[in-house]
Amino acid sequence: MKGLHIRGLACVICLLAIPGAGLTLPWDKDMRDQPSPKPQDSQVSVNRSSVPVAGKDRYPPPADIIELVQARLEAGRTLVNPIAKSPESLARGRQMYELHCLVCHGEQGRGDGPVGRKFVPQPMELNLDYVQLQPDGQLFYTISHGSIAMPFYRQAILPEDRWHLVNFIKEVFGET
Image (cartoon, rainbow, N blue to C red; front, side):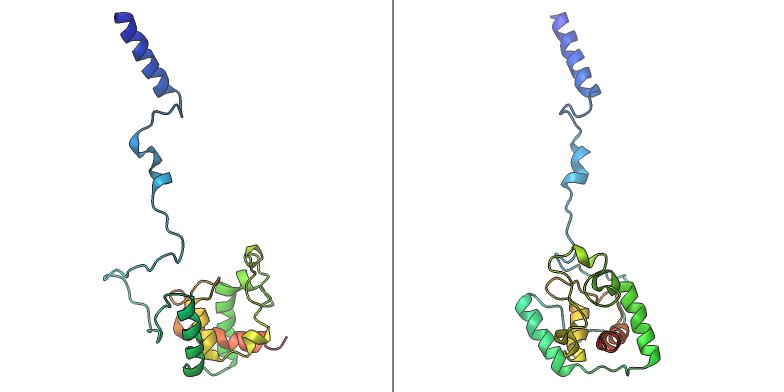
């Protein structure tokens, strides 16, 4: 009987000494089993002690693709760009574009940025008539709330800077 206990103890010691032998502690898989929400999978609630974001958007985030399309069209009819095109506005718009948009839309706005080339479909070409003929408010809404494949930037770019970005997109990519 004593030999059986010694062999059993030896087996337990072997299992503990061999990594991956199937005997793990319950928290060893925490990193694998943790919840890992993807960006934009859900609305994140705002902590009451957080610093408020400057400016409120007129339109709340859309709940689905139908709301997105309807709200974008409505924004195109009702939102008016409060920022006049000027060298200062275009310079600020360029800064915003280089910081937030260039990686997907590319230097020439053709949807061929280093990150954008990895997407299927590729990001929208900003020099197309489809983009250039949109009212400023519609482009502002798309930047703010995203599109089918484009993420939203309402929390990353201040409203005033989004208008500068609209001016930049219309002025620079409308020439090509």
